[in-house]
Image (tube, rainbow, N blue to C red; front, side, top):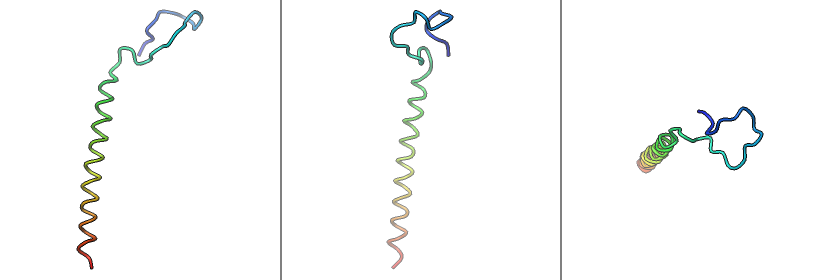
Length: 58
């Protein structure tokens, strides 16, 4: 990932600098969201299974 400006030093660089310029941050965002949804689904299924297992035992 390269800087969005042509300079050899930090002298004269002003303003906000966005390091993600031109990268694939959208892909990483979707990957993270998919992992969160998967964790919620698998956690919900596990809790449901664990709850049913405790209800069977007297």
